[in-house]
Image 1 (spheres, protein in one colour):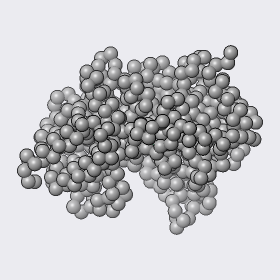
Image 2: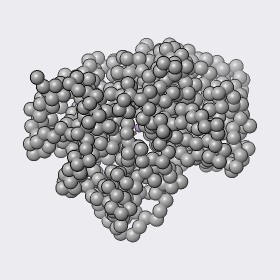
Image 3: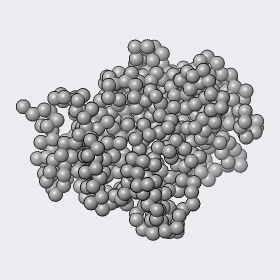
Image 4: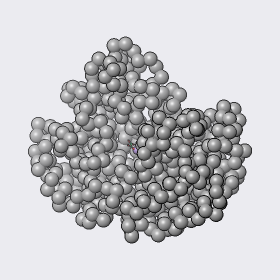
Length: 584
Ligand code: OXD
Ligand code: MN
């Protein structure tokens, strides 16, 4: 009798008709074969073995450089179960559309069967997935991003407890690109793209969309959150998980070099993108990072913005769509070195700044997490780390103060549900277009977001020692349009206030939106920010919040009757607190 995995692999091979089938074990020898195949295919190049040992540059099809939300589907039986924020197809329609595309799709290719584990090997929170793919780049990337091969097979045995994900590049044609998630079967089908978020199925597809469905059914949480530990001068580490929409510096925050290191405050990285959390025996939410690597955006990453990752990615790293120097080293904008003469851009053409950047703006590095000097000694703790604070954030030019704390859990859920970021218009100093992105899960929640909000409310009730909830905004601008806060390593000052609040200290004043630090509540010594700028960073203007109240009301309206009444209640309470506070 063959195992459920073998049966699924056989059935998939009958459909996709590969020339060869390889069951991957995750070994070094196998990885070398994968790299040889990538080099042979001609889109992957070895980097300088002296300065970047075991590093490679992969160039993707220029039509395939980012996640494609418009062709990402939740295939539930009923449209209402996918909700107003997801694209929807019936499972039957999805199968009818994708089966003919997959029929014979792997002819002339090798079908790789990739068992992988999301989460530390011995953790009860971890789960097994199996990805079938025809891309050796995907196999090599999955080996960095997950615990691939042997540990997964040992956990799986002959059981059917794995999330299957079928991936084929097809002909990398945007017209035939679909990322489909089947909630009933906890199954993923992804075709037509080799890009990380679409093709490394353990990440966004499983660890967020499918896992969010499982988490709701089983009473835990799968969130788009970094996890960090803040060490205090006494050596105690307090763990925090934070959700930010894309392009808000999540990886940099997770890996920050603390500006208060001389005072004994240090940041340890547990994860930079995803948190799976279960209620522990101690009544706290215990979080694991389901991933084993960082899949970070290269441009803007440099010695000042993220020195830890810069140290990590000089070996065993797979770069995608960055520039290539004549010395065969990777290069991107924001690396804080001069663009060397004679460079090739991400497409492999001689670099000409007039034709665009050297590195594609969404170019990436894929690096093993353990290579980061800041990796937490607890990052693979099977129990997970206990989370004391949730931090939500967005890019707001005016509205949100540097940091505030919600009044309680329910208010915290409202703060997360109304999270938003302004589009790049904000970069010009104007208030940009606001995109609502609740809990930074808008593209990743695998079911109706109204039910997701309800799940959050329920988790707060069920968790005896639920995290305190905060909101931060590193991106507030002064009347001159310039950023008021220096960000990066200085953000530790905000984390320190959060830690103080968690421990029942931390000076704050009560405002209509929550508790905001007083100027003296923040540790600002040695920081070149004027008292007036700090006051502006900590101010709450009613005139800014009135349109925000209208906008959030409108956003909530999308969910109709399914929206938990608690969120409308919080909305009215916020409006009432502003009214009671009088003109400001
Ligand atoms: C990511 C994303 O790549 O959120 O992590 O888009
Ligand atoms: Mn992400």
